[in-house]
Amino acid sequence: MKRIISFSLIFALCLGLLAGCAGAQEETIATLEPAAETEPVVNTMDAFLAAIGPDRTVTLAEGTYNLADAADYGRSGSSAYYRWENVGDGYQLVLTGVDNLTIRGAGMEETFLEADPRDANILVLEKCFRVTLEDFTAGHTQEPGFCSAGVVDLQASMAVTLRRVGLYGCGCTGLSGGNSTDVQLLDSHIYDCSSSGVSLYRCDEVRIQNTKFSDIGHREEGGYAVFSLSGCRDTMISGCEITGAITTALLDSWDSLNLTLKKCRFTDNRVTGNAFSLSADDYAVMEDCMFGDNVIRRWYSREGWNGTFVNSQGQEITEAAMKKMFATVTPQEPLPEQTTVEAATVDELLCAIAPNTRIVLTGKTYDLSTASDYAAGAGEYCYWEESADGPELVISGVDNMTIESADGVLTSHTITATPRYANVLRFEGCTNLRLAGFTAGHTPEPGECTGGVLRFDNCDTVAVENCGLYGCGVLGVWAVSCGDIQVKGCDIYECSWGGISLEYVSGASIENCTFRDLEGENIMVFECDEVFLDGQDFFGE
Image 1 (cartoon, rainbow, N blue to C red):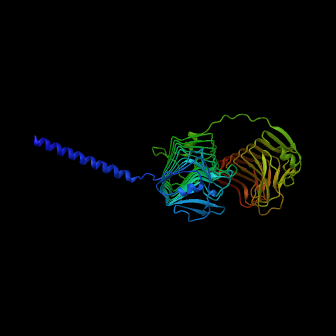
Image 2: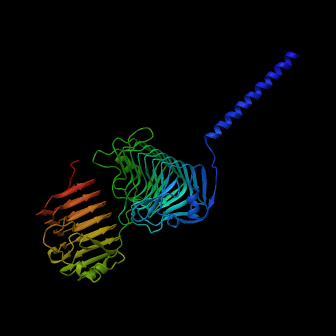
Image 3: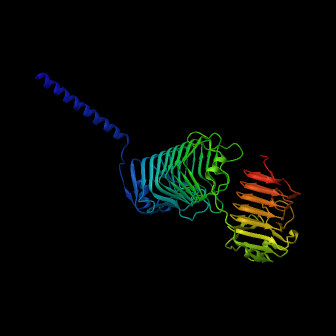
């Protein structure tokens, strides 16, 4: 009996010791992730700044918080954890050396953090560790436009999470940063930024998930790339929606390893360069992505130094494969019948610019500088854009328009412009254009210019037929980010750079043209495909 009692006592003591050890272990684990010490709820800018510090959660009540409302705005020394940095047109807020901080709003539609200066980021995290930003929206107070700064910027920080945040322009980039590790952007919305959605360099372990990117890129000038990565490692972009972008690329990656683009949806985007610009040494995987209703003329660079995506089995996804998988087949509907309008003067010419219109030139000379609204007016489909020495006429968003002479005698009808830095006629975002039977050029004698004669940006299905295009003008025809360009039977002469320049053009035909007295090459081609000269493949392929 004594032996049984002794064994029971020993067994009970062992259980007690084991329970004590387990309790001590649990307590040790808990201390590895300290809970926030304070959770102040603030409703003023000063209270928000006073609450910034380590090991705490700062809750911003519903409302709008402008950085300039801070009592110490632009002055340093108020706190060891933040400072105001002069950026030219104001100050940006820099949080520095903070560990274990959460800044939480009442929701993306309820709490707003904003700044006035366009050269200032809204919030900079410098050498911070374990910072979470969630449930608020941040951006600049001014309308979307040109900025030199973004919204949230990370510098040498670690373990930063942005969750359910809205980052908007005017801000050139939603999330930017460098030399940071373990960066997460989750369930958020980045929109109206003029350059990029995310731009990171030398960042590792980046995760961008279930985030919407809409309207990236300036409406007139376009932007750089929705995603820009340089020297990054282990980046996962998954479950994201990208829509309404006007950018040179959807993704630009240089010297970045282990990049994965997974289950993302790209719709209604216009790419002015290559959709994916990947350096040859990048290892990039694409899985289960969808593309619809995008304007994408090339997926990769044709110059050879670019890399391509591979699938989950490591097989290369080529240009041809991308075109086959994601080609959008749209039934070709017949164009509406054009309404014919005769134009004998420059004012009549400008007034006639509209979709589904055939403008017949009956006058001899159309000097744009003599227009009654020169440099001041703007119509629905055209406006004046200032160049270095005078206004440039920009015709924008017109579909199915013809400008041709009444008799087809090109020397009897001339459209001219005085400024040497302005293109004579510039078309932007137009489709189904036909220009025929007239002459165009600058009024001064041949000399130094930076403007061309006919310039096309983001245009599709353009025919230039039987035209005389002369200098002073740097180029006769200058097409950038266009598709289906035809130049036929034209006389191009006395231009100071060359005859025809095609950049990022998919599908071009040049037939029976005369090039004379040019400085430079007759035809210059950069990043184009399917270019034919007098019926022969220009690249000899």
